[in-house]
Image 1 (tube, rainbow, N blue to C red):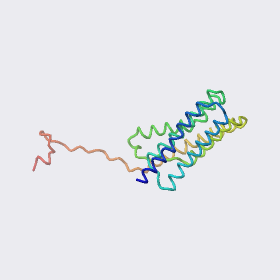
Image 2 (image 1 turned 90 degrees about the horizontal axis):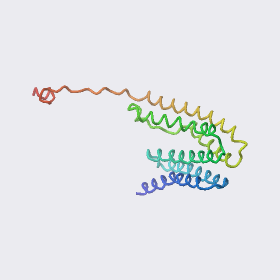
Image 3 (image 1 turned 90 degrees about the vertical axis):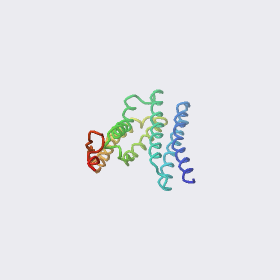
Image 4 (image 1 turned 45 degrees about the vertical axis):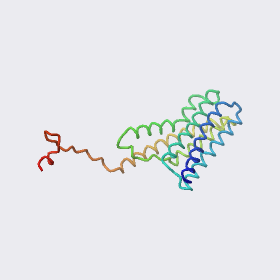
Length: 198
C-alpha cells in the first residue's frame, strides 16, 4: 500500500507540469513565466531522482514523465511564438528532437516486430532537454543568447535523433527472429486429422 501511494504521488508530481503549462498560457509577465519554467524543471528532476533512488520506476511513469515534460515545453514555446518572442523557424529547430522521436515512437508501436522494445531516454536527449530549458529562459529573460543557443540545440537535436534511432534499431537486431505460425491441417469434420485417426 505504501508503494502504491508513493507511485500515485510520484505520477502526480510528473503531471503537475500540465497545470503549470496552463498557467504559463494565462500569465503575461516574463519573470513569472521564467519562474514557472524553473518549477517545471525542478519537478522533472525530482520525479526522475525519486523514481531511480527509491526503486519506483514503472512503465506507466516512464510514459507519463516525458509526455508531461513535452507538453509543458511545447506549450511554452508555442506561447512564445504567438507573443513574437521567437520565430517559426526557431520553433521548428527547437522541436526537431521532439518531432523525430515522436515519429520514431509511432513507427516502433505500429510495427509488430518492434512493439516489445522498451524505449528509454538517452543521455543526448537529456542534454537537449536541458538546453531547451536554457533557451526558454533566455527567450524570456535574455534575448541576445537565443539565436546561438537555438543553433546549438538544432545540431544536438539532429545528433539525438540519430542516436535514438541507432539505439532502437540495435535493440531490434537483438530480438529473436519471429517464428512463422504453423497451421494444423483439419479434416472434413473440422477436427485435427491426427485426432481423427485415433
